[in-house]
Amino acid sequence: MNNGKHLTEENRYDIELYINEGFSFTKISKIIDKDRTTIAKEIKRYRIRKVPKNNSRSIPKNFCIYKFHCGKQNCDSSKYCYKENICPKLLKPPYVCNHCNHKKNCRAIKYYYYSNLAHKSYLQSLKDSRTGINITEDEIALIDKQISPLLLNQNQPINHIYSYKKDILPFSKTTFYSYINKNVFTFRNIDLPRKVKLKPRKSNSVPILKVDKLCRNNRTYEDYQKYITMHPNSNIVQMDTVEGIKGGKVLLTLLFVKSNLMLIFLLNNKDTECVFNCFEFIKHSIGIDNFSKYFEVILTDNGSEFSNPTSIEIDFETGEIVSNLFYCDPGKLWQKGNIEKNHEYIRYVLPKGSSFDNLTQDDVNLLMNHINNTFRDSLDGKSPYDLSTHIDFLKNLNLYKISPSQVNLSKNLPKK
Image (cartoon, rainbow, N blue to C red; front, side, top):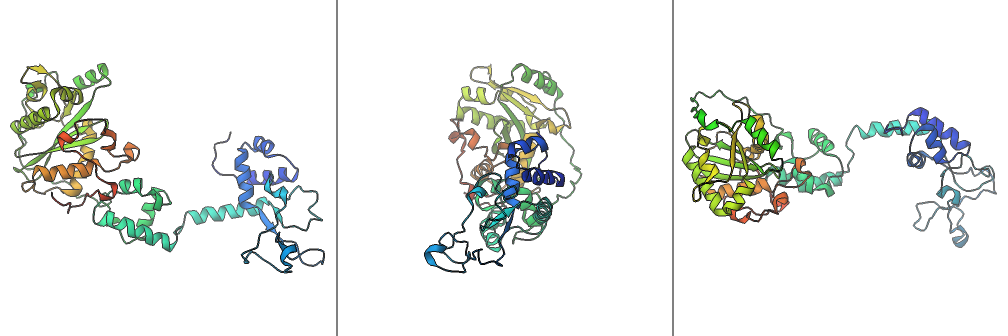
C-alpha cells in the first residue's frame, strides 16, 4: 500500500475514470494503490452538487421531501422545515451519479465527481491550511482568557498547558507557537519561559576547589556503566547542586531517572558535611530498606561537596553498604543530562544570580512540588508525581499533589 498521505492529480484522474466505468472502491484501490476509505473520503469531500435547470415544467422547483404536504412551489434550505430529498443511491458507494444509467431522466439533485475541480479545491484548501489564522474570534477570546493567566501569572510551560488544556486548543502545538508568533493572543514570545534567549555565561574567576581523586577509585563512569550492565533494573538517582550567589546557600537536587521526580533540599553550605546531614535525614525519613531500594545507584559530578562518598553509601548504624555512588567523567555533565535538564524548572523561579539565603526548606518544598506536578512531553503528558504514586514514602519527604491549573513556575511563586 502506498504510504503517501495525499492523492496526486493523476490519482484523482484515475478515480474519476474508473468511477465512470462503474468500478468498485476496492477495485480502484488496488489499481491506484490507495486505501478504499481514502477514495470514499475523497469523493464525499470534493463531489459537486448540481441542481436541475428549471426550463421545464416537469422538473420541480421544490426538492424538499415535505413538498406534497406543505404545497409550496419554492422552498430552500433557509426554511426550518426544509429537508432535501436525496436519492438513496447517493447514500452508498460511489456516492455520485457519474455512472448512473438514469441520470438523464432523473429529476432529483445530482452529485458528480470531477478530478480537475477536485484537485483545484484540494490545492486551495492546502494553501488555506498553511496561511492565516484558522480559528474564530470567539475561540481566540476563549483561549486568551484561560491561557494568559497561566503564562503571565504562573509561568507555566507550553508543554504543561497543552497537556491539560487540549479541549480548548483545537490545533497542534506547532500551530499554537505559530499563532503566538503572529501575535494572535495577548501573550507574546517574551512571555514564554524558554523563548527568551539566555545571555552568554560569564567566565568564572573564582578558583574551583579540587576534589580528592582517591574518592573516584572504582566509582568512575566506566564503573557505573559496568554496574548498570550487570544490574539493568537498578533504580538510578542523579545528584547535583544548584548555586545561588557564591558563598551562600545552595540547593541539593536528587532526580529519580525513571520518573523524573526531583527532590530538592536547602543546604547552608556547599560542603560534604551538609550533604552528609541531608542524606542522614533521607535515610531516617524513608527507612534504610527504602533508601537501599530507591537510591541503589547515585550518579553525580566531581564537585568537592561529593568527595566523601562513603558517608552516603554506608548505613553507619550497621556498617552495611546500602548504595553505590559513581562519578561522571570530568567536564562531561551530559552523562547526567536528566538532572541538568530538570534544573531549568528551578531557574524559572530562581534565575541565575538569585540569592537563596532568604529561603527556608518550606519554600523549597513548595517549589519542588510545583516542579514535580508539571506535565512533560517526555513523560507522555504526565507529571513526575503522577508516575511516582506507587512510592509510599512521598509524604515523608513533603511531596504532594497539586492541581494542573494551580501549577506556578513564576518568579512570584508564593511562599508558605
